[in-house]
Image (cartoon, rainbow, N blue to C red):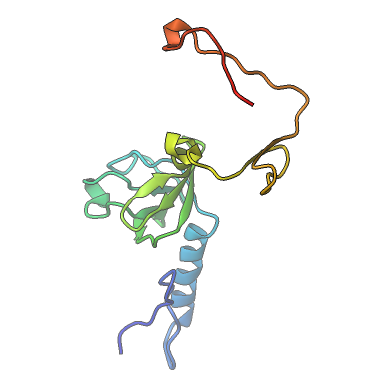
Length: 168
């Protein structure tokens, strides 16, 4: 019978009458320690750092990693006991990338910046409701609860006319 593993994190399962169960159990704990509350140092390296610390984790976002990471594109890696271990991500996994202070999501094909999905121009287009400091509803599809508001025109240098016009 092939080694059994959990469906989502591929954690090794203990087998009936298995010798040295502690080894399998410890492998599962290391995987959990790597993947739960996932925070990595970087995602832009294509080769392992020269002097990794025990427990260091990275995303291998590049298409052609080299060295000990060769063939591991898209994976999460961890330096453990003097060697690199890799983990195949599943769609929906989230990872905080420390050097960018950004959250990344695994789409099933690649790691994508969560921030970029929020700041994309299309993210705020064609909204049916928008609430700023309050909740918009069907009667008030645009609602703002604030002490001050500033509306300003684009200058000619910014591609505007310098005039601000709005219709209420």
